[in-house]
Amino acid sequence: MQELQAGQNRPIDHHRVMLDVGGEPDALFSARMQAGIVLLGVDGRIRDLGDLVSADQPRSRDGSVALAESPGRFQVDLDAVPAEVARLALMLTVRPGLPPGTTFGVFSAIRTWLTDAAGQALLAFPLPLASRDETAMILAELYRHRGQWKFRAVGQGFAQGLPALAAHFGLRWPAPEPEHSAAGRVEPRREASPSGGTAFSGTGFCIHPEGYVLTNHHVIEGAEEILARSPRHRCRLELAFADPTNDLALLRADAPLPGVAAFRDGPQGRLGEAVVVIGYPLGGLLGSGPQVTTGNISALIGPGDDSRFLQFTAPTQVGNSGGPLLDGAGAVVGVVSAKLNAARVQAMTGDVPQNVNFAIKAALARSFLEAAGVEYQSYPLHPVRPVTDVADEARAFVLKLECRG
Image: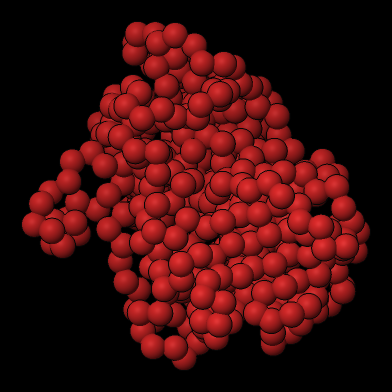
């Protein structure tokens, strides 16, 4: 049985499979945890509660997914999954009514695994548990890619619990007053629009010559209109594919774009290596052109030991979200996503952190593009080039995203 890390995926060569989740101590896990599978469309949203399989509703309306054993053993007939369903998300939550402070951190181990109909183990995902204080989580997904079903390890936690998890799937849930984490997204800049509504901006980058643009989901969330511009181009964009769980969105332009970014093959990030951030921070307050900052990869893991993220020191500001994190040769090694909340950390520790920023690893972004059926360019590790050359090349594929909602 092959073990995967968060963000990795593997094809499934069986039509009927079992998806299990368990934890240690086993008795405590059974008493405090509940699991479910939700059937999602291409947009990452649930159609209605008929697509939620759990102890309260042990079978999907089409019969493709069924709870075989509580708290978390599911039987899945992949051939019976409706064509309009793009993925199945396995979620885990703390049972309602337990005392405050009951989180995933009380367990010594949590893992999910996939077996065939005969019980032969195929794939497993042991969840990294250090400092996990969440109460709801998406553990893994089964998704379609060019007619092939794949298993993807996710491990996305929600400290705000079931309401936040439900919101990711397009469901409304009564939510308590949220507790704030020390890490926060590099939010798009938002302000009132003269024509009414809200205007906000962020960054994206082209990954395909037909005009596909990658960014963070939170950059375009709530947008009714999306425009892209750079010193060399201006066009309209529409949403092509979304993954709110991992904060990624794929947009498509109404015309080809002048440049295309390439991902790096091999090591996705090395501790201490130089990186370049290029984007459009502060909604144009710093000028109409792209802004460039440099730094280093300072950690290969994110908050709460979240292995989907890299930590880097290149300064970022509001509006850098969705931009590329480039290595010294100009290849993409991440998608800029979040920064440490300096004011909140100062209140907690008395110290002001400097340049603690996070990017979604390129491996996860590439898996997202594969799930969307969009090809991308990549090349092996190249020698480091002058930052001026990297920035000049990136000007052709990095875009400012102007949204109106």
